Amino acid sequence: MNHWLTILTLVPFLGGLVIAGLGAERKNLIRGFALATSLIGLGGALCLWLHFDPKSGGLQFIEKFDWVASLGIQYFLGVDGLGLLMVLLTAIVTPLAILASWRMDDRPHVYHALLLWLQAGLFGTFTALNFFHWFLFWELGLIPAFFLIKLWGGPKRSPAATQFFIYTMVGSVALLLSFLAIRLATGSFDFIALAGMAKSGLLTTKLQAAFGWKNIGLIIFFGAFLGFAVKVPLIPFHTWLPAAYSEAPSPVTMLLTGVMSKMGVYGFLRILLPIFPEQIRAVLTPLLWLAVATIVLSACAAFAQRDLKRIIAYSSINHLGYCLLALFAATAVAAGVNSSDLQKAAALDGALLQMFNHGLTASALFLFVALLERRSGGLRGLDDFGGLRKIIPVFTGLMGISIFSSLGLPGLNGFVGEFLIFKGVFPLAPWAAAISTIGLLVTAIFLLTLIQRVFCGPLNERWAKMPDLTTAERFLVLPSIALMFVLGIWPQFILGAVDATVVKLVQQLNF
Image (cartoon, rainbow, N blue to C red):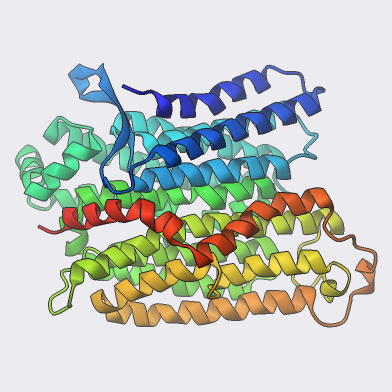
C-alpha cells in the first residue's frame, strides 16, 4: 500500500504547525517556508498526475484500513479523475495565494499557518472516501477560512465572517445528521459502498426498513443537499458569499473562490449524484429551476454592483451555476434523446472542466483586484478609475485576458467548459438550457462594462503616475494566464484525465 495521499495532506498540516511556532518577527523565513511547503504540495500533486492512469476510471493511490471498525469507520483514501483534478487545482492556487500575501506583516506566522491548514483541509476533502474521515477535513477547511476573514479582513469582516460560519455550519449539521441516519440504516460510511447500494436499490429499501417511512430517503437527501448547496453556493443559500469574498483579504478570496467553493460542487458529484440519483430525479424540475436562478440572478446581481470584488463574487456564483445545471440535467431520464449517455457525459465533462477553469480564472481576477488595490490605496470601486489602459497597458492586457476567459471567449479556457455543458444540457433539459443563456448575455454585459469603466475612456488624472506590473508581479500572474491559453487550445489535457471517471459516473446513474 502506498501512502502518497496521506503524505500530501500531512505536508501542509505539519508545515503550518512549524510556521505557527515561529516568531512573528521572522517574516522572511515564514514566507519562504510557507511557499516552499506549498510548492512541495504542488510537486506531489504533479507526481500523482503523471502516475495516474487516465483510462481506468476507477480509484487509484488507494489507502484503506479499519480505523474504528465497530462504527464502520475506515481510513479510506483514493482519487479518480475528479478527485485528482481538485487536488491539482488546490496545489496550483495555494502557492499563488501565498505569493500574493508576500507583503502581509500582521501576525504573518498565524496567517500563513492558517493558509496551509486550509490547504490540508482541501487535500483531505478531495481524497477521503469514508464520511467520518471526510467530514473532519470538510470542517477543517471551515475553521481556517473563518479566522482568515475575521482577523485580516476589511472593515466589515466580523459580520462577514460570522455569516460565513453560521451558514456553512448549518449546512454541515444538516449533512452530518443525514449521514448519521444513513449509517444507522446501512451500517456504512463508505461512499463507494453506499453508491453501490443506491444503484441496486438496496439503499432505499434499507432506509425505509430502518425508519418505516416511504419518503425518508427524500428527507435525508435534502439534508445532504443543504450542506453542499450552501458551500457552492446555490441560490437562495448564497447570501454569505458576497460579503465573505469582498471582506476577506484578496489572497484568501483567491482560495475561497478558486478552490473552497469547489468543495460544494465536488460533494454533489462525489456524494449526491452516486448516492441519491433516485431522489434527485424525484425533484429534478425544482432543482433545475434553482440552477437556472443561480445562473441568471447572480449575473444580474453582478451587473448591479459597483465594487469590483462583489462583481467577481457574484460572477463566481454564476459560473458555478452552470456546473449545477449540468449535473442535475445528467440525472434526467432522457426519453427520445439520441445518445443520451453521450450527452450526459458531455455535460459532466464540461462541469469538471468548468470547475478547474473557474478556479484558475476567478483566483486570477481577485489577484488583479488585489494588485489594483495596492496601487490605489485600497480603492476598488467601478467608478474610481478610468482610462487605466493608457498608463498600465500590461496590467490592462493581462487582466483583460482573465476577464475574457471568464466571459467564455473561444480560444481561452472558459469557453470549452461552458460549450460542453450546453452541448450536453440542451438535449436533456432544453428549457433550462435556453433560459440559462440569458446568464451568458448578462455576463458579457457586466464584464465588458467593467473593462470600459476601469480601463477605457478618459484617464482619471488621479492615477496618472500609477505604475504598471513589476517583473515579480508579471511572473506571479503568468502561470494562470498561460494555463488559460493552454486549456483553451488543448482542453484534452484535463478531459483526457477525467473522461473515464465521467463515463463511470454516467453508468452509475443508469438504473
